[in-house]
Length: 470
Image (cartoon, one colour):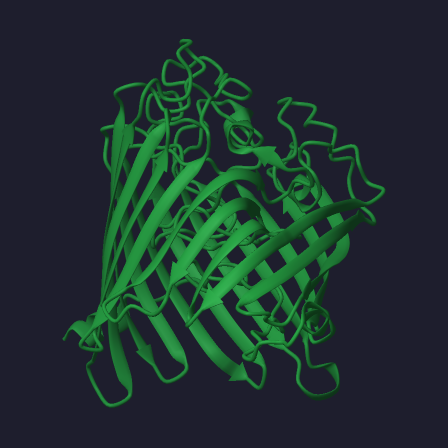
């Protein structure tokens, strides 16, 4: 009965662009892990591995009539080198480059509303939108030590956790700098932890201390409706996190995470997943997660209106999913609830939402009193090399004038995504193409103000991405 119900309710979307949260953070698909120690440092360098990635990205936002449409063409890539192992130690260095090859003037806001470009600018450097001559970044520079299946890393690197992740739906993913530890040899759990003191968020080319990443993206408004003023005024030494994942009986997965941002906030999450067969060919997949946030200290600043997470505030989130995986088809239904206790807050510069209802090209970060429901379907190998995904979601948000619970003035909306991918084999192995269409329809009251419409609802985002990995 459960299987039949989920299949009936399953019309919907595909996975997030490229890498799912929880997967190993490997933007370079050809990345390998040498097994044997080299005899010398020179030998470790000579037996190292080079991996690269070329990418082309076309993006077009079709806004409602009378509002400005935008487009962008970006080309670039990255290259990295990692040594072979020397007594368990490895050294890696990698960088990326991006060129604006033909785009709208992304420095010009919409003439009717004064609202700046939202999506296309993210292909380049949001901190320097005028830069079109070439954007480069040293994104990996680390020393790692491997013991058994575990590792400790110090330096600039990629991580992919529920709250700090790649969010790689643009040209290059976000990167972090600090200490990280992954314990994979324990029988009862896999543990990840770390302390991050600097970041280079997606859509930027510079490195920033953690406290200076607050407000690089749009910062919205304070709960009282005044413009947020935490950019450059937030104080914290960095981010500490720890997460544990335990699996048992081949059916159950339990995850527990805690992210501490001293003097700003604490975020804790617990998630339980369950998988069982409901026939020889089909599996029933389900999960539920709870997130609790609390302010720490003065929420980032002791000056009124400059705090990121208001002192004494909190938020609660519950998210659940149920679905059927049968042969090449995966269907699921998800629901998320952010309670009215307060806004769910997590800097968008750090990663995408971990809730099951996340859909590419929009987020529910910054809102409270939210109901979200999403149905998805993914068809693998629709034809040789092709996969097709779709999703349909309804997001019930507070009124745009309710600034206590609506940070970015986003009305309720319906979103539909279509995701088509093709992976080449043979002569063009390493090449893949993706087309993503995200359409958002207004389902709330915008009070006749177009600033609540542009780049938010009654719009379509077209994305064509070509990748070549070697």
